[in-house]
Length: 493
Ligand code: FAD
Ligand code: 2HG
Ligand code: ZN
Image (cartoon, rainbow, N blue to C red; front, side, top):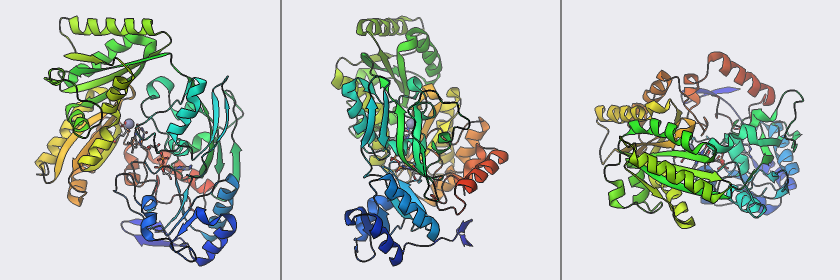
């Protein structure tokens, strides 16, 4: 049952055929089935949004996309696929950055987009139970009038789903304050690869009743089952939020700055985000947030976006002003300037300079993305060493690699190394890998801090996981999914 596919041994699966469509018609209404097969005869380009990823880097050839509305429908679809050995790609908002959300070949896509209802919200405990297909921004809007916020926030919030966030264990911009989804997700409902519904949708803060199975699905990237609902602890909205962008003359000042900021702001610090000069300039060039004044940017090698969230505005502003004064009046100032937002529009605009980098990079060209955990002190070295390596290969220039930049979540030790090129080419790919992975490994870092493994990094998993860990991951996969139908070729080869 195995065939040779490229360089990897890959299982042979069934393709979706007429008999399958006839069966899916008994489960779903016509509007929930997109297929190039009769009687629907969907135009192939209507399937493009499901077959191509956000970066336009990974391309599948699915003939069929199903959009169930209920957990029962998901279960019926999966049970059928299990019996027919039809591989499935669970898909949320398709904003993933590692090629996990699109088919490698002609797998069936099960989109959660129609499962988009809030099931319950308790304003006292802050516990929200929602269908997996709810868009993150719509959940933020839902809990906001109840004075709560989602514990996760990211640039893709307008399209990513909460189920996709959980499936990728997305980190994002609030991790420093609210921790990872492994902590804030209280329960999950999952359709297992044989169609069984695993109901672990508890709303309990504490539940030490043996193995915590839900943790396995958080970050499994759809390889162990389809998440159909999520119970998540939301946080009380801060009464006051402020942000400031700080310009630094050298990268070396970032670490001492982080220490000083933590010491002085302590409990009100809610984000400490990094962008280097190249990333800043691209964000501005592509209209992500308003440019800072020329005199604020002059001499800046990089920037830090700092956010505070607290209970009393005067108290927080006093702390922030004291911080800025002490930073600027120090004998050897760590910053050249600080721009403090004065109103909600400026607050959003400063955030856009950081959140908008991903969008800006993709407007500028084709992005090679390395999402790594490395010691904070080495962020700049990783970026510089990669740039120099590309230069030594003759690949730096207007017609090949246009920019090499670093940005990310300093507070989490997570660097986003982005290489922006005019096109995706084998030459650039070969220059970057295994170079970047070996560099990260030399720091005992992680080759995926928050975006996951997807299809992009299956071959590189060993840089961050021991042989024993990978062997046990494979045993877990085989236990849940003996036929290997759930998102094959993702996470594990
Ligand atoms: P998809 O892209 O559809 O899927 C991602 C993976 O999860 C796939 O493997 C898919 O099979 C699986 N999956 C999706 N839904 C389910 C489900 N219901 N059940 C089982 N498996 C499922 N990531 C971060 O960690 N931090 C960031 O700050 C961040 N910022 C981003 C900014 C931008 C502009 C973009 C485009 C992406 C960003 N990402 C970030 C990457 C991405 O991981 C997140 O956008 C998000 O968590 C993916 O959710 P999605 O619904 O789009 O999932
Ligand atoms: C971010 O932090 C996201 O902005 C995306 O994780 C990072 O595009 C990237 O490399
Ligand atoms: Zn990130």
